[in-house]
Image (cartoon, rainbow, N blue to C red):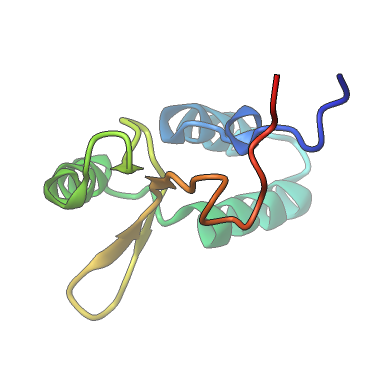
Length: 106
């Protein structure tokens, strides 16, 4: 059977791994290119400047989770806001029915 799409979780990179990549880029000999990549990582993945703060937001998001419906991974991306909060990456379960897809039989 052919897969209609690849699961998104295979494309997710944990925050700790991104911090390792950032540390390596800081010593890269092409400073201009490394700075561009670091800026892009920061924009797409949250600041990463304060891992303890990001962890606190992840833990705070746990109170919003419902097992099997909304879940937050340990290394979920955190996008810091400038208004006293942050967005935390989460998994949201969507049933076939809610997606308007018929159940496969057999």
